[in-house]
Image 1 (cartoon, rainbow, N blue to C red):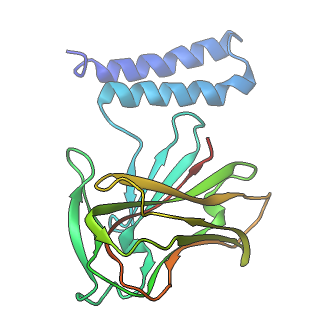
Image 2: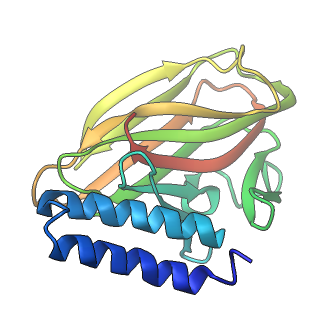
Length: 220
């Protein structure tokens, strides 16, 4: 019943805003925020989200409900992964992310030299907003070779701005992990690339890693 009335509800929401603006009951500075909540209400009523798949489902974009700014997920297909095209080391598997969406994840069979790199244009991000970069990965039960830490690094416009190490040995198996690489903030009119890397180059065999992708979202 509610869904049948949805078109009328959408028109009512928009008319409500226009009327309040005309009467001076909504301050000009509050109009963008008002529109944001109108959009969220309409999306909720229609059962839709703001998620959009890009580049043949290699990337996903959505709106952060808290800040109203864009978030991005670069799936494994859009990352540069060492030895990814050699079936001795990696395999691709479908993963049902939601009830009706399938994406591809990269599953590590075994490898010595591990690098997972990504790049995105900084112009995708609004100036003055702090963004965080995270890798979304999972260790399968029976994963081996993670005694040494992985190195995470973040480069902004060609210069390294963050480097850290994370030990995966004690991480819970079978659950998705979000490994924070670091944060960045775009300056006004700034152009160029944001690049990031997940590396383990200590020369021993590693197995059991599943790579969903890299997340870029407003910092909490």
